[in-house]
Length: 175
Image 1 (tube, rainbow, N blue to C red):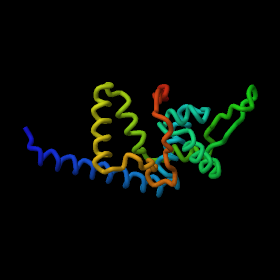
Image 2 (cartoon, rainbow, N blue to C red):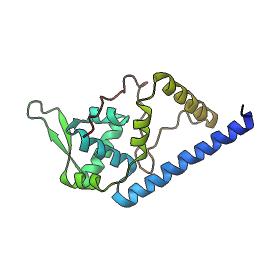
Image 3 (cartoon, rainbow, N blue to C red):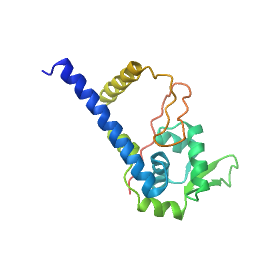
Image 4 (cartoon, rainbow, N blue to C red):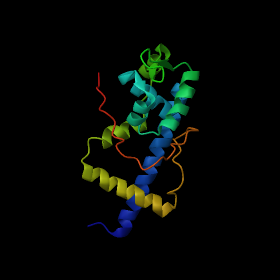
């Protein structure tokens, strides 16, 4: 059995590895695409499943809808996504990817958020609970429970709303 000091050293090294890969990957995505990792993730989800309503897109990316609106504003300004009002109900807005967005996705690298979601979603509830509890403990140790979670290399903050219930997105059909 590993000693406590060996396990603590392993935890610190694992946090360093995670931080390193998230930072490097985010810089690479931004350099290659001009988008933050979160923006590219949104575009990739849209490429697979558009058109989507803002709330559905937020659910699939595990982001707060208000955060999603900010990301979409930036993507729309760049001509990568487009908002289209429903003909049946003008209050309903669908988000679609543009040809420019499709071209960007075709030549883009993998993104860390997508890897994490794809790795976490198939895990058993028990394994997800263990990971969640461990990360919550690290957050408590650092005293950052009240710090809004800023998206990596992005001006966006994932606004904490009420306790998140039923954020499980519908499965994405891979093509």
